[in-house]
Image (cartoon, rainbow, N blue to C red):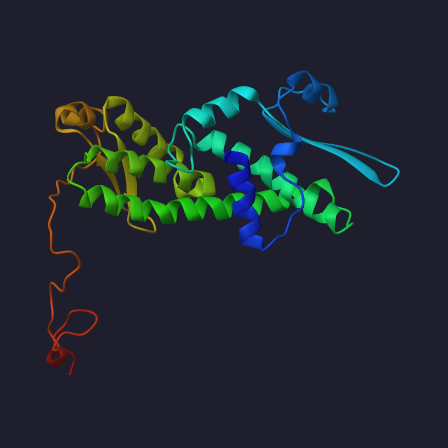
Length: 252
């Protein structure tokens, strides 16, 4: 099951020998979860803990619909924009359980703040690992003639969503608005190129949607490009040129 796999990943990452399995503590009882939540909120994930006389009763609540969606679209097989949010929710719940159970096994107390901070660190680690794996997936798409290049556009969108979750400052409201407009017009995915105060918004667009996307991006400068097969190469080599591209003799 997915939750057991997530717990195994965390245990391997932190070299934990945990005696408890998350599946044994799982509940999907929404009424119970809302009753035990101090605010009676609508929840999709919560670690339920009752401590008394040095003992604890623990359950991990995950919404049944969330588990069903993850069962239909396993993020360990393919992580994309559709299952990403559900994946992080489940991952956070398993992280909370694992951290609490490990400390309980060592008979150490743990605060809610500690669990939240630990889950935040692990979520960021998982996001970075997901981005790293996208490189391998992109290579597989390009090398397999049976796969559609449109999958590369999907991968670009997955990377966009994941990076936005890492840090909101990777983009801004103006860029987000343009990106969403391009997507609504038919673009599959995209990414930012460049650094600092300027750059480009690269979009992956099916040929039959190019006109619509161009219209949606009206007001921006269009820079056409084409693919090449050489990869990184030296386009200029002249030992007589300095770093400011002035001939060495001109500086004398």
